[in-house]
Length: 294
Length: 259
Image (tube, rainbow over all chains, first blue to last red; front, side):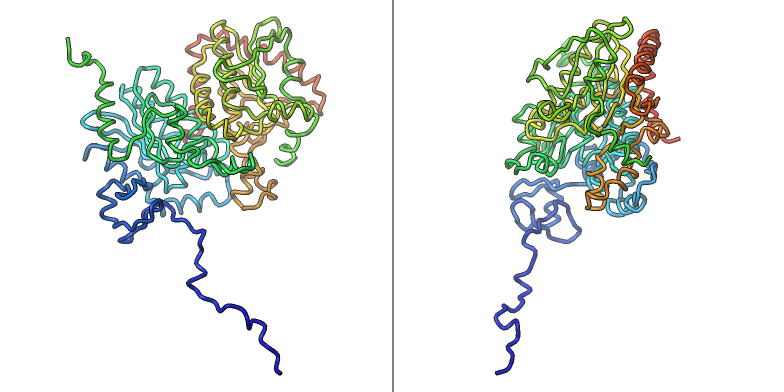
């Protein structure tokens, strides 16, 4: 009898069985026609998603969006005037591969940095606006983000304008070392001066807002709004799990959790935000007699 | 000495911790406990003391000396109530016109369920905002490890000094190595990349002074510090408060402001 092949009893390879089961969909929107919702797995047309403010019409999952999409939803058409649009990061401490990462971030996001700042009108009310970009190094804060935010608050203080901000950030940008950390103090100083001058600052926390941004200007607003289901915290969930060596409970650090703990004024769906912000701004107009009464 | 050796020195067993500095630098130290909101965080030691005849408020991050002490103090990793205790004492310092001295030594603010539930990010953010406009001189000295936001939460000051072997960084070298190279053993390379030594930070304009460690003779260090701290606080106390606050704002404003 001849020698039997070693793999006689081995099941033949079936490519259909070997797909990566652990793979989860990342909540971004590629350019294809259709996209599955990461939450309910419904297959959605890109066009219906765009029409619905990039919120799943089936389950209400909020897809991450870039600053251009956000501005389109929030600012009155044609009113946005960008500040410091060409400010670019440099490799200030010669961090390995940072230049390459910046180039990649530019290509991936189509943005020059992780925040877009400027002035605009929302429902007819003038304000300063900043919108962070989840696709530019996960909205991390380096010196350019810190500088742009600081300049925006300084401008708003000088012109007695309210600031409306949309945060999304993985935290301070490691590749700029201690200089990133210092941006937390710098931006906080500018927010404080804006606040002390009696101006309104409203923030919308979107998925994810963590680290050095949470520990600075994301948590320093007069009115704190959160998008449903957004991850909001100081430490990332993985870091916490490693520190305490246990699994975190479901929903930990989500908007609803922060709301329950008293850190958020209101959770607003993306479709409700513009109307809410319009009313909020109207209630903070300076020099108006209360409710129009004399 | 390379960057990682500094990290090792900053963390070394037997290195004087916050309380040792308090005992050796100040007289009549009265410790004040609690944040009046949740509890008392023993990773933060705060109180009133006298320096060269002058009443001051002292706040230190304390990592603990022996094992029992370290566990009790959570290895110097503060919870939100620690930052709130510090802020409460700073507000009292402002009320009574006492200068504030912060002694920073922590691997970072604690990352845990309770810390998140009680608003770790908010607690640090509030300290950054309030310290920027605290109407009394503030001096922060990094005496060991300066771990990210947890250190910065006590280091928004008119001047920031570092001991020769102290380090100050946006992320720990271990954290950086595992993100950058997916390999926590490359801490030495990471430490060098992060530019976290006192010399690096002086060059980057992030600190004002390096305090020499006199080859580990800390009695000499205390003698030097006592005089230097008192002189600096007195000098800053002479400034009109608006000017002091403008200088403090500008101190941070210029970091990363381009040319």
